[in-house]
Every structure is written in structure tokens, then in C-alpha cells.
Amino acid sequence: MGALEIAPDVFSVGAKDLNRKIFDALIPLPEGTSYNSYLVLGEQKNALIDTVNPGFEKELMLNVLEKISFEKLDYLIMNHAEPDHANAIPEILEEAKNAKLLASKMGAQVAKGYYEVPEDRIEIVDETTRIPLGGKTLRFVDAPWLHWPETMFTYLEEDAILFPCDFFGQHIGTKENFDYEMDWERLEEYAKRYFGEIMLPFRSAGQKALEKMKSLEIKTIAPSHGVIFTNPDKILVRYSSWTSGKLAKHALIAYVSMWGSSEIMAKELERKLREKGVLVSSYNLQEADLGEIARDLVDSACIVIAAPTFLGGVHPLALNAASLAKALRPPAKYAALVSSYGWGPMAGRTITEALKGTGIEMLGTVEVKARPKKDDLEKIGALASIIAEKIGANGSEQSPGLRSIINPTG
Ligand SMILES: Cc1cc2nc3c(=O)[nH]c(=O)nc-3n(C[C@H](O)[C@H](O)[C@H](O)COP(=O)(O)O)c2cc1C
Ligand SMILES: [Fe+2]
Ligand SMILES: [Fe+2]
Image (cartoon, rainbow, N blue to C red; front, side, top):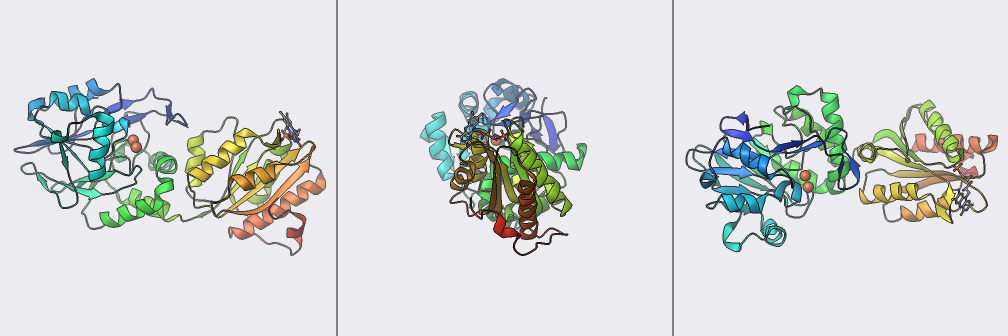
């Protein structure tokens, strides 16, 4: 893509990867991703912030060479040690003989371990460090656990640009480079997916970082995936809400069904919840995009699993969804299960077990032998009433006694 000027003497020099279909061997990328790297040119010194994924080293180097030769690179800054941003460090340091690698204390350890950077090429930086480049000054924000322990942000004082690496990232590999080139809804969707996949388990670290950012003037946020925010207000408002765990009146239904019974139950629950004013998103786990599920986990108040008993447990796709939900540590307060079985119900027990330790309250399980009948569907209606009431949806009213016909914990 060449070197793209984002502010005077500040260039985006990374690479777009529209062909990448999956991240972390788990999350689909509907429109690829990008590995953004930034070159800051001062009157005396120059710095490169983050590098690129394996396979894109050459593109990064050619982009840098459009602006400076590698002897003129004084600093290579590693905000985060994950290979999608740090893997080109050895190649860059090999070319840029005078450059020092700047990293957090923990980052320096990781850089030695993963990238075999010699001790004498590394300088540890922290919040007291200032790197004057001549007309441009770099500072650092200690921002651990976003999303690895060594992560930090770089801040360019004169232009008020924050380079937070993965924080504020979005997997977007299309031609757009700036927020104003994208429809906000589409951008928000990608930012929220990314937040759900990567940052959701680290909400409190995210809140701390946002708090620190308040003491900085920030005109631009230039993350290392996706587009640059030239008007950061909107995304800051979203991040503030997403990191706080603020819940929407939203239930997420993840279902899998071999012969259709659990699916009928999932659909009935969805219909009833909607009637009660609950926002519902429903995913068939056979074909679901886990990125969408991660996005919805950001603010769903209730997680519903619908799945049959399978070989003395629950269907493995449902178990997988439950373990993903557990790992992402979503703010959801409630869960529920609806299930069909052939001869001995085990799904409720298995899912309840899988969610242990999350603090998520199991509101009820409805387990039905073979096909759901009229009275089973009534139980589902009662479960919908409990969910709607718990999450405070409009129009939810629960007659006393309904609860008694549902197993409280399976
Ligand atoms: C591969 C397989 C394994 C199953 N294992 C169990 C089981 O261990 N216990 C049980 O009660 N039913 C078991 N069943 C029966 C299903 O739970 C039952 O058919 C259920 O109604 C299927 O729900 P569905 O229509 O949502 O797929 C199994 C079915 C299949 C196909
Ligand atoms: Fe990362
Ligand atoms: Fe990344």
C-alpha cells in the first residue's frame, strides 16, 4: 500500500492482508485484517512503531524505504510482542544497524525469548521515558494485559497521536485507512467484534488504560489493525461502555440440533423473549461465525444454550461455545439451557458444570424427552418470562408459580 501520511512526517507503513480468513486459528475474518506499522520522522531521529505479521516483512521494508534508509532508523518500538506485530523485529534490526529496540520491561524479556534480540540492542522504556526525535517527542503508557502482559502504548506528543497496538484494533483489510472513510455502523461492528475476541477478558486492564488516557490530549488513535480514528470520541465512548461491562437487554442464543428438537426449543424461546421486548441474537453453532458470538458477548445479559444430550454429555459444539464463553469472561449475569434427549438427560448438568466458576447464574434448564410437546413449550415460555424479568426487559411480567415448573439448575 506504500507509505501513507497520517500527520506531518508520520506515516503508516504496514500491510493489508485481505486474504487472511481466520485469526488465532479460531475467529473468521470476513474482510481480512491489516498489520499497521508507523514511521515517525523527526528532525534528528526516526522511529518505527511495531512491525508486521510473518510474510509481510518485505512490504514493510519497501514502505519504510520510500521515506528513509535503514541506517537512519534510530528506534524500533515494540508495543506488543505477538508475532503479528513483532515478528519482523529481527529483520528490521538486521537492516537498521543503528536502531535500538524500545520495549517495556516485560517486553524486553519476551523480545529476547521470541526474537533473540541481543541485550545491547534493547532499551527498556516506561512512563518516565521521553524520546526526543527533533520536533517530535515520544512517550509511553504502561498498559499491561491488553492483551498480553508486556503491552504498552506509544504517544506522540506534538501530534497528539496514540499508538495503542491491539487496543482499539479492528480486523479490517479493505482499502479504507481512516474512520471517516467508513460507515460508522460497519466500523463499530468490527471494533466490537475485535473487542469481544481479544479484549473482553481484560476489561479491568482496559478501564485502567482508558483512565490513564484521560491525562493525554488525544487527537488521533492509530491502532495496529484496521483504520485510524481521527475523531476518537465515538470509539472512546464505546470502549468506556464495553470495558465497564454495561449490559444490554440482550440475550444470546447459541443452538445446535441434530434432529431439530433443540432447534424448535431455541426458536420458541427466541419468539417468547422477543415478545417480551428482549433483544435476541440467535446462532446455529454448526455455521456460526464465532466473531459475531464474541461481539454479542460484549454486552449480552443472558447466554442461552440450546443443545441435545450427546453420548452422555452435551453436543460438543455447545460445549465448545460454553468454554469459549467462559474463557472470554463476558459480563453476562445469567444463563439458561434448553435441550432434547433420547433416554437420559445430561446436557443441563454438563453445561451447568462447564459454566462453574464464571459467576453466571443458571436461571433454569428445560430438558425434554424427544420432541417438545405443548407443555414443554409452555415451560419455555415460563423460562422466557424469568429471563426477561431478570434482565429488566420492557413488557416482562412473571406470574408467581411459573418458576416452579422449571428446574432451577438442571
Ligand atoms: C450421536 C448421538 C448420541 C446421542 N447420545 C445420547 C445420550 O447419550 N443420551 C441421551 O439421552 N440421548 C442421546 N442421543 C439422543 C438425542 O439426545 C435425542 O435424539 C435428541 O432428541 C436429539 O435432539 P435434537 O433433535 O435437538 O438433535 C444421542 C443421539 C445421537 C445422534
Ligand atoms: Fe495481539
Ligand atoms: Fe494484533
